[in-house]
Length: 568
Ligand code: ATP
Ligand code: MN
Image 1: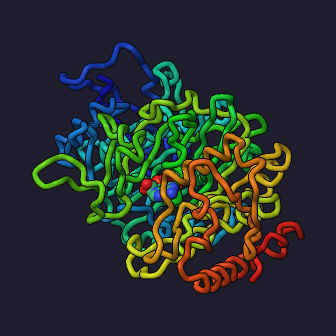
Image 2: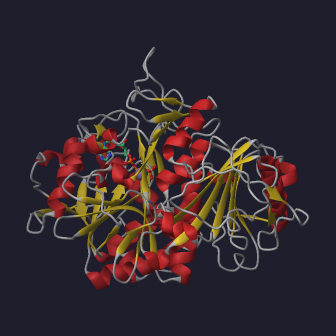
């Protein structure tokens, strides 16, 4: 067992600054029932220097099995019939973008693109929240610490120390980040800290927050504080955000909100898309090696995964349609916010009583054909995934260079009723670079890097509508997953290179008229609508939304990109 008990003596007053804190570590006592592992030793001095003092039990680097046992003992989880840990995340079952703050200091003030997703917080409030979080954890009987890292390419490795109030948040970090070897742990120095205190409710006035929960990122202190929310996704997307700052700006690496996989002859495909568009689902392809399902970097010579795990949606999951994900629900995996069939521990995948956003997290190697390490070649194909609930965009189309840039900057998808309270009609969303909530820099930075790389490497770019066909939401239905998969396979195998195409009159997209394994009438959206006039009207409406959204970028882009706008 890798479990320790440490006690810490504070020799300075508790101040917020990690760098300014110096703590003296008292000799640790081991608990009789927990033995010190003989297989590895690591630097005790290095373990905690952030101001944790009174926690009687600091559980460092526990195994998944131990973390599951702790969760069960605390009554915070149960096992599913397939042996996964099932937990509920509490009040929050999704990210809270309005409660994510970036500390405005001399580092971020001039460099961060301040907007609805990059909300500034004064430094003084970070100090207040930091103290509160530390106090909260110091009052706890147990806390869990995990050393891990992000970025599979060792040139960009980012060491992370995750400090958690809950054992299951710690297991999430084990599943989702990269796991250092015992040797690597010996001289592990954390660069960034993530400190998670879900049960801490903040006083908004005192803490400068919107309400009782917040995720606060400080680049100066290299710390992410998560308070008042137990949603595990905050942890991974917090680190994603900081990598979206560091990599493009300091390392000349394009960071991307995308999944990626690689074919037998080393051809890499990346799949950009907003939440729910199919990144995780479509990258799990038994014929291709999985690089990662959500966050990647594109360097001069490769594409690498930031993470060490996947975070897949469970709503309506079936073993037949998504076997890889289904079989990853096993010991070590964490399922979130699901319900069971009465009297059983069998997950009812169709039940959205707690949330539509039911999830499972698991280490990458739970997918049988995961690439290890998760580093692939330069992309040969890029897919932009959109879930168009209006049923207007074609299920597959090939983009010109200008169109690719136009679509990337636009980042269109549509939310449907049911996911968010108050949404009764499809709600169009334009999210720059298919990931605006996670991008600290101006979208132009990422777009410009992608444009250069696409041109240099002559990448094929495809737009895939995984959303509605046969009419809009409520009238038509979601594109069949088997059809979307067949279209992607055809594109990857070069079967569309010489296919006949027609040009969509409004969006200008080049649509293949034949795709192996897909009935041709699915390919042209208008043909799938009973009411052709209604189609034309909706197409015009959607085109108008694109044009309106693009107004804010129009001044800064080339003629070629502007020419790719839909015709209203
Ligand atoms: P996030 O960024 O939130 O992780 P994601 O892009 O990874 O989102 P997925 O988890 O892949 O999105 O979700 C896509 C969902 O849509 C899955 O539940 C999948 O079963 C469902 N789906 C239905 N039809 C299709 C289709 N034609 N293509 C892709 N996904 C589909
Ligand atoms: Mn995903």
